[in-house]
Image 1: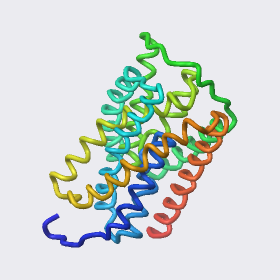
Image 2: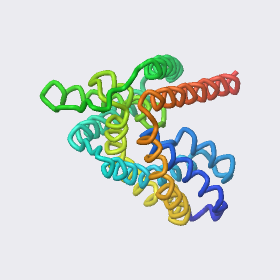
Image 3: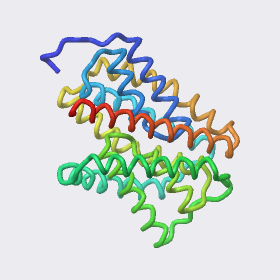
Length: 262
């Protein structure tokens, strides 16, 4: 970014990092769907730089969020490893599909799927005493959920946790805390790798990364505490509502693009 000397104000980076950290800790997701427009609006950067900078917050938020859940007794490392492996392949598949298929119907299909999943989460009472036991069938299902998570990220540029968490809850019958812990652990390697790549190619700056990462580091444990304190049935309603908000944001984005191309 040597050709762009613009330095976004620290308060904009801190605001985005705090929001990203709270979302990561409480919902187990990346938060880029909210952080990117916030950076564009407050930090006055373009879309590409906003996406690269938001990932610098997601990386530490995922690591600290997973650590916070582990301190609370939730550390499903083996399921998370399988999901992460699937997500790596899924991201490549998503990138390939992005080049080959019409994004319009894919986006609307995903929106309908997201609304359906969010509604089911709202109507589901989670059982936090159920945990995943990894056998051959379970391992294959976890890999498949990871592939779905990666495809979602590759196609739509949002964290796959919003899809992986309800999928884990429905397929394995686990509670929200374990599903969020798996999502954060699975998200961390890709986020760290992506952050390194963005810094190396100067799509984001170390100065921006320090501000947004520090804010995310401080905010994520607060979000994680909220996830543990809130009863499971209420947490599901809040998570489902969050999914509906994301679906609404994607609908608005799709309509804007249609209006621009018309």
